[in-house]
Length: 354
Image 1 (tube, rainbow, N blue to C red):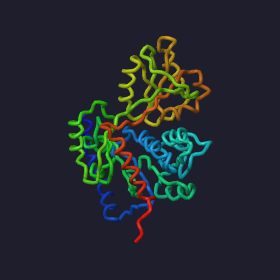
Image 2: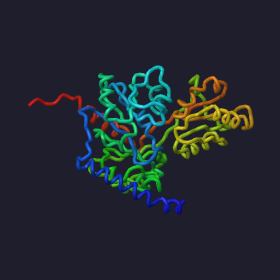
Image 3: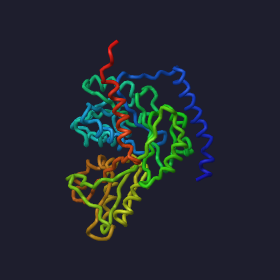
Image 4: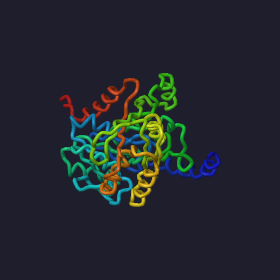
């Protein structure tokens, strides 16, 4: 692995040089960055995938949905369409991408939009949904055409961006100094018993600016539910399982299932994999090869929206979805929520008269 990184390091240097030039052009206002007089929250990271952006978007939706009209705006990665679109009752994951489809299915009162060019998509969104009061940009930190009012960066506890390298030698898609534009860091997927000493060591390593706050969260798995009927299921140590997933990082999910169900097999696909009939046949064969009659299939919420189109083929399988959410450590959830609400309220509180 070290030899491979050594070979790829010159390419990473070239990529880093191009990124530094791009940031310099934005910092010098040669390339323009637009700011809206409107509460826009950007959730992103410096690395490629797997830091928990989707569950953080859902965390914010849960926090805000009873108070504000919310819209999410994503690129719609791996969708088969282009341009701006707002999800409706006929939308599928092929139309808008798996993560936006996940938001659309779970939160019917939230406007879910996609658009590659955020600078173009935001005015379109506000035109089509003029009652929108907050926009959450999913995975848009590196897109500097829009200067969001609140930037949240997520970084994986096991692979902090401070310890990573630029593509293709590592997983970073942006240079480390770009993190200075963030307002909030969240160290995600932490161990439950993270000590205060390690917390302080990580904060020192991240070296936040005076305007930046660092939080820590763990991934919490909810009760599984059936892909089609939504009936609740159980995590039973005596029942063998097949894990079917196409996500960036499976290690945390694997660790969780090892503790909950003991033995399980896994079919792993590429991140955002579009399942086809051949995949279904592989799933069937793998599942049938597992000994016993009491057995189940587990998948993630992101994978579930790409499997739902095969209801006819999968309806007779005991296939269950494992939901996840963020849980803030050190009793700092309220502090984080207050910071988000304070940002939004600053746009809507009456201004003092002269």
